[in-house]
Length: 365
Image 1: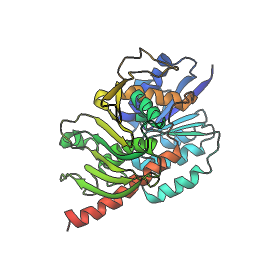
Image 2: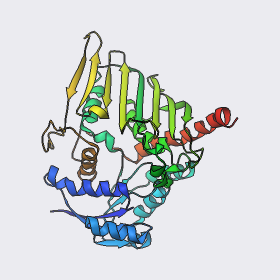
Image 3: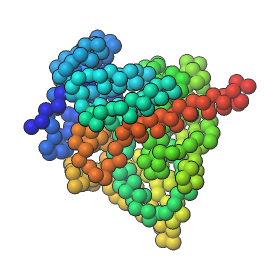
Image 4: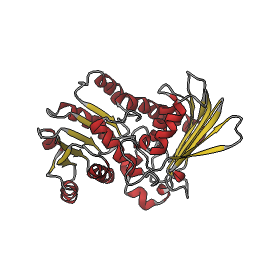
């Protein structure tokens, strides 16, 4: 059996989720490589040592020690947004690395974006880079995307996507997540949440989406003005002429963790909500009715563990994202590569410019 030695750059909450997903792979999929949890690195000694002990990593190292570890073949970049770019460069220089899983956003500035774009053209074909947009692997989203690409609904006309939660209304929650409150495009709702929404829209509509304007709302004394708590984008797809809105919010009370997508086309419509994640809905013009397409946890023919009717969840999609990362054995999957990550990052970065214009005109003026 193939063995792959795994290393984590980052030991926070998202790293725990990735550790869970990796350790769950063997329950879902047969023929998986054996994963050896080699090392975890982070700035704080106590954090990395606690993480290594709790989740079975063989070593807790500094980032410098990690970079010299020749056993590591797969690197998961899971630290704060503003170190993703530097950690990608570090991982690419490590001698044994063949897999790199890069959490979003892929970088934090235009300069980094441009350098990463140049890097992406030179990355060896022997190294696989996958970006952490796991919502693409939610089973209902996967099936909805296949239905959309069948062409039955025809040419898109307009769309709307929301990614909302309300946790940042609580000061105690904000205090624990100061690194996510940095100004856009490094931090803020559009970088943290909206990047998932941009990724979803690009999977359905293509990666040439353009911003025509942006709005920003919400403020707290302990949050920099440049860090959007709520932001909304007006977007256009230049190829089809479809237009729509994407909004991301950290301060929408009572929404839980809501992802809601609606696509309207010349021959019908499609919608999906994370509140009812076991199905998506579609409408064919002339039919007079919406159809619920039940999906559940169906990833057939690869797996339907524990059964096809079990509602999919956030962690389940992450497990499948890890399966794709190590095997690629799913022809139906939309796999977000570095090119996709950079296309999303372009929108995130341009959002910051549009929000700056909005604040100068309507908030600071």
